[in-house]
Length: 327
Image (cartoon, rainbow, N blue to C red; front, side):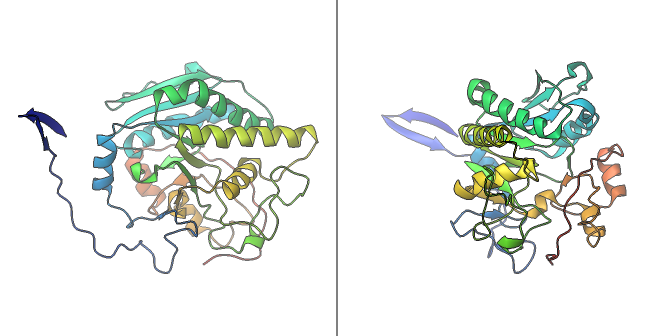
């Protein structure tokens, strides 16, 4: 947008935008929620016009930080993560990749798009998963206050064992966003795997709960991410001091925070979907040995390999067997 003065009046020239006129906005699937009870949008493919959003965010000249931890053996996932993020994450916008790692010399050298930068931040390794979560929340909260707030407008926190398979753009940006976990979308609240120990800081009763959010992809304005991660760290440390072990550290404290601090935008399960999840739907509650992907479209493994030349690597975790399954 350019502005020039003429006889004390300002003439504004606005860049021209050409895009199709949206009809009745409908998501890609039928009979699904597109808005939360607190009026936050649930982002599905087909509910937004990316050309308009790109123009709005470019006028604001926003910058986005993508935070990832590549510690210990998880360094093996980093190259594919960065390669696919360069292809699909925030295309056309300024991005800083904040890589926390205990092996800085192993961070791959990559040619990045204009306006993008990799920032290597040395981190400590940990042999215990519980300690690793505490450490991640501590470091994100500290750096959000001391550094990130001075360098970027939005912060996105992602697990390193993710492959970006389709465009993930500014439609996700909001003051605070969470991503619906695909395993538990549509479940009644009593079936969600919230922390049920009343003595835990992550405790959510059976009469509470909106959605179950994934710990693999969340973010928002830097100040909001600071508040979220600070709560998660402090709550986890309080539980640890009382020798309380929650079932799912990566998600329990996050879900507790988002229950009482409602996100201003919610990403649909499309952002955490995968072809393997679809193919192994019947068995997934028993054996969750799957490489988590952010993908708004299902792709075969062959298509994915042809597209981004991904390594054949996996990250495993376990999930409890759930009686009720969503359709």
